Image 1 (cartoon, one colour):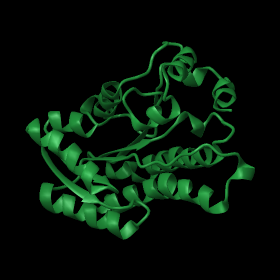
Image 2 (spheres, rainbow, N blue to C red; image 1 turned 30 degrees about the horizontal axis):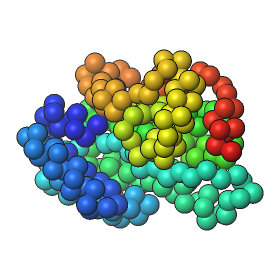
Image 3 (tube, rainbow, N blue to C red; image 1 turned 180 degrees about the vertical axis):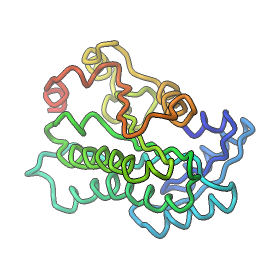
Image 4 (cartoon, rainbow, N blue to C red; image 1 turned 180 degrees about the horizontal axis):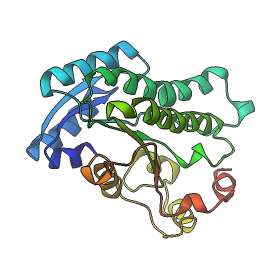
Length: 239
């Protein structure tokens, strides 16, 4: 998404926990001629997020687009999960999204700014061994839709993007490490394939463009129809 925005002239601030990963991503954008800066931080720490957004405003001007995509996940049944483990995912996904958007408000272009939260099908489709993610993503979606109401009068739009299985991502490499596990997931997607990072980037670009100027509080699912198929196969296969 950052690369796609940069291709269309955006000046990008990349945020993540590991500086080496930020440097690699920034290098790719710079080689393509984009303007980019980085901030290594943990989104669970509000002050760190606020400082990064302030620096973004100081370097690049008012903030037009904010994408909140930090997430954590691991498969575990409720009885096999500690309270701290549950809290860790809630804090990364839900608190991290709140911190990002709450800190951003004072630096946003008003009117005209666009917020995008990354959700998951778990927000509306309960999945065993994923209680923490289901709770966190449900919160992310309602948080974003509530911001669409509260911040709409400022001319700020807020929407969610829900990816399905996406090719060449760390998450899918972990969830489907073998050709056979990949084929099983693809068979549970009506379009019978993984999505691409480009398809998600194009959706984000659309939601931040003038073409979507009257869209706010929406949840856009980009999963090849997977969420339409209410199946327990994924859990059965994980066992």
